[in-house]
Image 1: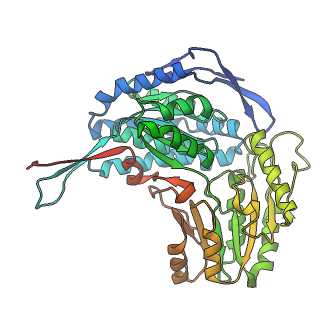
Image 2 (image 1 turned 90 degrees about the horizontal axis):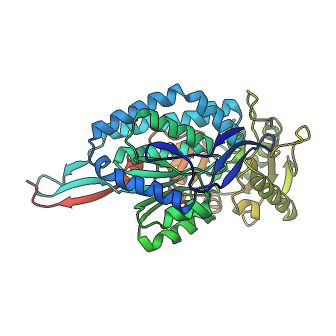
Image 3 (image 1 turned 90 degrees about the vertical axis):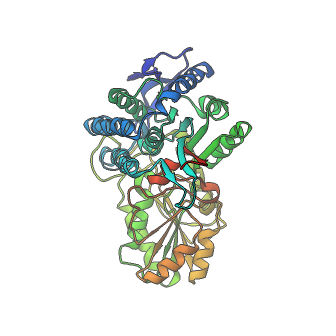
Length: 476
């Protein structure tokens, strides 16, 4: 069992001011794998004060100085890739190969892409040739970065790296459910040699450290990834200090599969939902299928679900692992039962664990057909390996159903008609639309409409979130 009770504050690992131990549970076997501490308001204040003291000097460093340190961090990350993989696999139950090839890789890719972005970014520019105005981008200040358990290092690097690149200082609060990868990352930051106080880490839960950070008068910005419910609370708590709040929240993506889609569209869509054990906010969890191919689509979806293996995280291979916690497991089970009760047709998977797994938070890959968009399973974010299949007749109906949601993170379109794909994508109310299984490029902006959040992460858009814009006259 790992002892990870310390916090990283002002360039060193320190004991919590008051003991407040929390057990980290391995979701594959429900056993304790580590002990961390939950921070108090005194711990949080200490980290914020450290970040504030470091801000004046760090904010004045040159782009070249910051770039050199981030490049060094990238090399350290690559050298400790296996440590990151093992931490993520242990803390959140990601199968080892998935943790290695998807989770750890995502962190490396974000660091690499922000290095490219920073090299190209101009922090000062002339407004235009006829004006004497000068435009300056300045760091917003001290940032509270609150990250989730489902893609831990992905979200840490999407926040920490642009904040560092912008010249901000920060306090990171990783998810207390999956905190180990964040602590490995803090070790990397320390090894890279960032000045004391620039980066700080305090573990804690949302009610404690999260609330303290979002309402603190010496925090200039909050960047949060997590549930829509928590995003609303953070927004309200931040309001009194008028700080910038960027949110990447839930999703209920629609995947429109037209009759002229490619032969792999259905199986690809199911596989996408099942990946990461269904624990991704941008998954296409509502599959809308044109009626002329509906019967075939359901059969293909069942086959793909039945071929999706479920097993413990430590095993290598192409399978999905458990969901992260008992709370998450119970929520998913309740929603599966709700789907059955409301009349959806359960065609694969269903309640309870797979028969060969007696312990762990394992969920059967589950498919519901004949779902309508008013059912609970079509409206609530399940966050597990559960897919709802909905029939449609016309293009207009498919667009209307897809947009009939509180969310708007990522939607999907499957058709070999290029013009139709463009026409439909323009009408979908979401921050991203992926067509025919083609994922977004590195550095592409990621974020949502409506209750999926505000702001963007990735590339120059992600960097600009951590900058204020100043206009200065009489510059020439």
